[in-house]
Length: 176
Length: 176
Image (tube, rainbow over all chains, first blue to last red; front, side, top):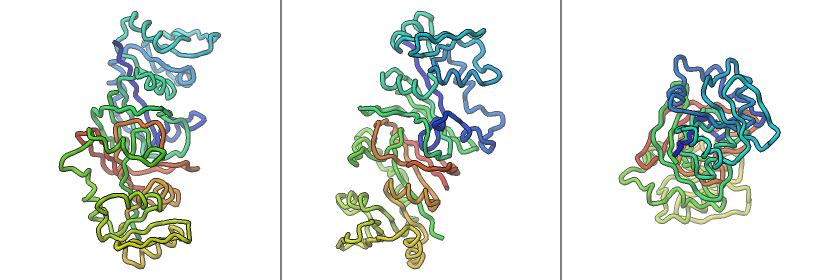
């Protein structure tokens, strides 16, 4: 069974980006930590592929240099005409999360990184997310794209560990 | 200057109660901690009075026994007809937070506990809240009364400390 894992930053009031997608509140100078990537590279070492929505993917493409090296990326979109050519291992996928799961299993994927707020919500609502590492940024932004969405039933998580950082970030790992 | 302090539990997705005010997700048996009140009595030892909104107050009144002993309670309401008789030191107040601040100063109050989601939001929006201790419960409830409200400007907080508990609660103290 594939382990689906999320690693995401959230404002203290639960937003992962402003309404226009910007992350300026997260990347301000005062939050810079020298020689500390908040456990991100360690997390990524255990990851075999990344699953992300198209909007997150197009944001990632603006990063220089391209951050994911040789790790396969599956970009989910409902748009059947969507195409993308790249020298990187990027695959466009228009099916369901369950169909993708079968494909990933066939590709010997064991650990998939789920990136992007909407996709994390989709995996949670289908009870397919196994782990989430949330880094709480000590700022209230008031509005934006929420980390968690509406749901119709309670969902309990198991707290695994919490770390704090000198810049005020609080990072908690939960299993679902 | 009076220090205004909040001590509140929130679901992982940022709700302090369900839409109907219920807290069943917070008080479930599996979260029971023997001989540990999550620092609440220690927090209350430094408190001279409690400020709460009428709705929170009327919820508190349903608790048996009455939980606040001899500590003065100021109940804020916009309803000028609201009255309440009690053997406890409860005062109904219809003015602004600034007017209440003057009264509390006159009464030699140094540390006030701000209770209730809407009131916490009001104190934050007026830049009058000094401290908030948030206990994150490891459950997603999907909808309800939010801890934080909309705001039109960013508000940075200073992280002071975080504690974890064996039942999965994560408690963080911030100064504003």
